[in-house]
Image (tube, rainbow, N blue to C red; front, side, top):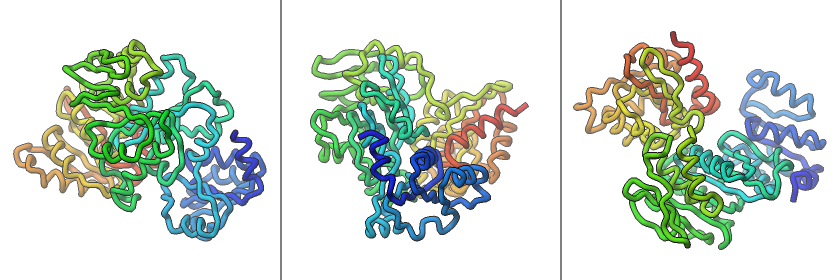
Length: 460
């Protein structure tokens, strides 16, 4: 089925699109171009949306905005935004009345004409997705990278060819209750995350399973041998399983052994490269490459893998060096939206940084983060909704008394950055790694990272 076929099949239906954001706005425009009856729903008021709303009205959309935007949903087809879970009471009631609940991403899977590599996990999925896309491009494939990484692909699907390859980063929000089939599925790791949205931790774990549940025996599932959930996933998988590991050997996949990365498959065990040849800093990026190399086995040869790892500079907002000013290095790790991501960033630093952390509260614990900040940070500036929670975790750490760590809370983000810059001296690192989502003050981590970079570049 093509995208054109799909839209024609729902052209005479009443359609609601929930969330006028990055993924759904192109969809709304496309549906309107076919003359579909579209109601666009969003929690924001008209004044908050500005010209964007008036443009959709001019194109023929009906708007349902504000606090009651989910009430009375009875449309034939409802496209949910990723952040609105399928078990939301409004969606459940609509489904009971006969509404079809779907999403931009679910439809993309049904119309995509080519092979799909799908990546999910609690940490590392953006970098790993980007590495996989870079590996495949270097190997000669025409690659389309999208999904949770911020680039919707549905409206571009007519331009995707059968011999192309799609690489998708997928969140638990997107995967929850979704039907999708990937040629290669990869789960980087699992740790508590987004517990403000999921019913509980098990619901979060189970949401990730959608990435492989429709795979067959000719597909591939790549799992982290050291992750405690991998055995659980294995029991439910039908695809061939490859593993990546930095501690143990595997029958099929990629391992780290004596400082070198090896690929193991039916052709035996072969060295790809030394881990210290990887351009991206940090042990976590060695893990990302182990996962990526395992995923592209059979698609990308060892020499291409090595060449990309030695040259690829990484993705925006992940340990991104912004500038060096008067001997102070400013690093943007805004994509560090969970404690484990921030831990990885801290461990990649060559000297104890001045850390800026805090943000939206996803109801996840900060215990381990408190320990790591005491051990690895020179000073911590906290801002946002979780500032007090992170401060409490630092003060509760068994390492706090001996660390001498200073912790300061400043509500305003701009003031926080300026305070950190004023405190820093030559040789210091100022690291923005929030350990939290950005929704308390920004649309997303990318907007937060860009604003941080703007503030840093304006420093004199």
